[in-house]
Length: 77
Image (cartoon, rainbow, N blue to C red; front, side, top):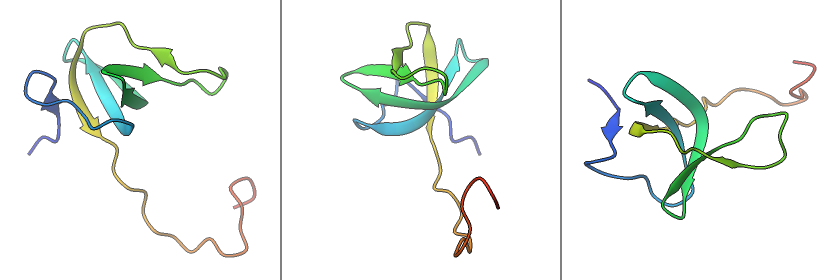
């Protein structure tokens, strides 16, 4: 079963974290939806950039798995 949702059927909730399909084939990850627009953020940039391509489908980003991270940080684990 596919979790992709056509933008013609439904749009995400405001500030949802989503993955996108452009023209039903190119995938963009770690995007957000707000003010009736999709945005992406690249690590090198400080700002969110509006996606002006033809977004055809979206999928809500799933929750990260729970892990034992006590005493660890992201850089040294």
